[in-house]
Structures are given as structure tokens and as C-alpha cells.
Image (cartoon, rainbow over all chains, first blue to last red; front, top):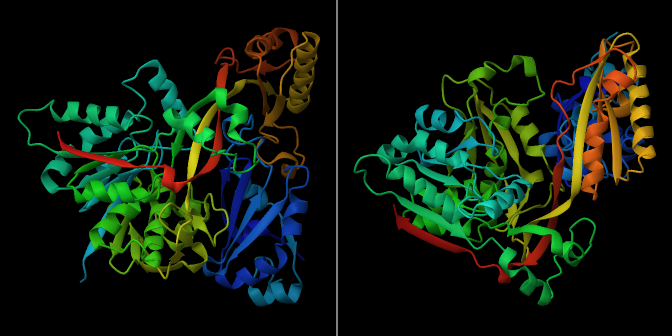
Length: 118
Length: 454
């Protein structure tokens, strides 16, 4: 079944030059392993294909049940050079939360994911 | 109960809430008020102001902030640490002295000024000595933009602030210090931490990171249960209650709005994060994967277990240089077919710019309300009530950018229909001052501390 990331996590994003960072935080600690397994660098790079021009890096923070993604070439040059409304990557957070994950029904039920009980 | 040191955040950037500093000193007991004014591009804006008038070049909001907290500083011994000095800390201190002398025969107040971060006067000497100051991301040497450099400042650490505090400064004004040093310095000073006590120093840095963006850790801009954040109108800014062992509690004054919980503090921790294993500062490298958070009580989050290690032998340098011109203009198209009309207008505009032979490094079109922030991820939407066409151009030819700014308004009468929202007038042509991050050998940067009674 499809589960929306926005129902599993919250997030905040910011900038460093032309790179946006998105910190994705599990809404419940027990959902973090699922995020770590499914929300891979490849998965996020596919999500942002055509939106960013560079690669994606991922760092794990199990202590905060969070993943930190660096999205390179995300900000149209970044800082004052950028002509984008979101020149500082402030809302890349919610753009990432648009992603949907495939989760097996059994696992969704076990983890108590939204929509996993049906 | 063991001794605590309370450092309150009263400003997260130049332009933050003017009420916040006063509310922090009046809302309950604090020891230090920390005011962060400098973002990456702020230094260049200040340098432009200093070029026009040598007595400027600092964050002028700080003068009003000092006026609003002066009774607390004088009567209760609250000490203020601010990077409001920008590119002219000495002039900033002079402005503060003027308000101190404005009243009756008030007792003297010690003001500490940290300088030495400004590398602009030494830039050619440094380049000649082999410091390439290459761009941290592109690797390009600074020489390629040298003639367009406006400002160059090394990020100083906590050391000079600690020195000023040790000399009794009630107010410490710095130029380009790291944001986190403003919070870490008073903790280091008060608890007498060793300069190689990496774990405690790293804790101080984490404390600084959590409160350097003001209310972003006390319920502001918080996505987690945002509807549930109480009373944003009177939001309380965050305060660090530091302990000698390095652990600390983030809290806010009673009877204020906002919310301090593990979710919100975590959001702030990941904000602008790179590699969490190495959060590099001049004083220590903090490991954000070691941070532990615990909800200790209502609006109280305890932070502990932070580890750190020795810093590198280099300092980051913030350089600003002139990078051409830009202008951004908008028009609003209404239902029906708002998006198609906006797209049509964009094509007409681009054809006219091409027919005029104007050249730009970039022309960018966004459709606000449809795809401006999330691009194609937002998906298709039914015919929206309105769409804002937003077109920006950037290039080295000022005349071309000026001409662009004259090509938008005519579309109101000679482009597609149902257009409005041009009340703001012609797009403003701005010079682009771009950011050039670089590294430099620590040994060539000499911070200076000057403390005197005012």
C-alpha cells in the first residue's frame, strides 16, 4: 500500500549556497527504521528528478530519529544569485513530504501507520 | 540545586521581532541576552552602507534593542552579547555609547568590542602570500572575482568574547563571529571550561545552534502540529539554562506563547545541517549524532550527551562580491484559464526581450499558486481562481535589466486578458551581491578585544 511521507514524518529545510538541506523526522520513534530503510538516497533523487540539478546525499541521525538530506543544485545558484521564490530552500521540506512510500500491509498494520489498520 | 547560567535568545536575524529583546529581559530572570543579527549576505549590505557613510556598517536595530533592555542591564546585571557590529563594530559601540550618555548622570557601563575578523584591508597581502581563498564549493580561486570583492570577514570563535567578558564587559559587540559562539562563550566563561574540553564546548555549540534562530526552536516556523502551537502572537523566545557538565535545558519564560518540545527542537537541530558528524566551528567540531533530547517538563527540553573533538586549523571566511544585476516582476491573472493566460504572457514577454536583443545570464519564470515552490511535484490542479506570473532576470548588463523592468507593465494593456496586481509599479533593479565562502589558515587571523567604560 502507498503511505504518504507527510503522514509519517515532519521536516525542516534550509540552505547552504546552492544546496538545500532537508531534515526528515519520524512522527513516532518506531517509524524511524522504516524511513531509514525506504527513504534512500535513490528514492529521494528520483522524487526530485527535474527539480534539482545535482546529486543527493543522506546522513542518518538515529538519536533524533531523523535523516538529513543534502540536495545539490537545488536553489538556482543560491543566496542572492537565485531568482527563485524559495531561494533559501525553506519549503523543500514539504516538497519532500509529498513523496509516497510503498509499505507492505502487514508492516503498516504492525507499525500502526495511518491507513494501515484497514 | 547546582548553579545554572541562563542565556536568552533575543534576535535570530537582522529584521527579527523588535519586541523580543525586551520581553526576554522582563519575562523572568536571565544572565545573558544573545542577539544574532548576521546572515550570510548581511555583511555585504553593511559594507555597502559603510562605503556610503564611514560611521555606518553595523545592525542599527541593535541601538533600539539596547535602549529597550538598558534598565535590565544597568539594574540587574544582565549582560548582552551581539554580533551587531557587522563590518564596523567600533562605530556600533560608539552608537551605543551615545544612548548611554543620553540620560542623566548614569553610571558607566563597560563595553567590549571584538575586531580582527575584517580581512578586506589585507586581502591582496593574503592572496600574495599564497592564501587562494578558493570557493568552498566550486574550488575557484578568489583571484577570479578579486576586483569585485566588497567585504571579507573571518568567522571568529568564542575566544575573544570570553576575553571581553573576563575584562568585565557588560555589553560585547562583535563583527563576524559564528552565531553559535555568541551562546557558547558565556557558558565557557561562567563554568571555566577548559579550551580542550571538547564535549562541553560541543554542548555549548549545540545550545547556540538551537537558539541562534530565535523562535524557530520555541514554536515558530514549526511544522509538527503547527495548529497546536499556542498563542504565536506572544511567542516566547528560547532560553538555554546551562549546567557545568555541558548539559542544558531549552525553555522559555512563563506566560508566553509558543511551545518548546522535542519535536520542535529536533526541527531546529536539523535546520541548515550538513554532515551531522562534523558541525565545524572555530572552537570545536560537534557531533550532532551524539545529541540526546528529553522532554523534562512542559516547555522544557533537556539536551545531554553531546560529544565533540578538536577543531581544524582553518577558519571559514565570508566574502561578498558584486555579481551583476537582477530584477523580479509580477502580474496576476484571474480565472478562467488563469494559468494559460500567465503562460501566454510569459511567452510574449520573452519574445519581446529577444526581439530587443537583450541578453541575460538567466531568465526565470514561476507561476505562483501553481508551481513556484514545489515545481512539477505539485501536480496538475483544476482551473485556479488566480495565478501570479513571476519573472526574474539576472545579468551583468545593467541596462538590459533596466529595460526588462519596463517590459512588464505594457502587458497589462497589450497582452492576454484578466490581468491585475501591478500596483507595486516597475520591478526594482538591484545589484547582486553574492556570497563566496572560503577557508583560511587560523594563524593569519588575529582577533582583537577592546574593553572600556562608556
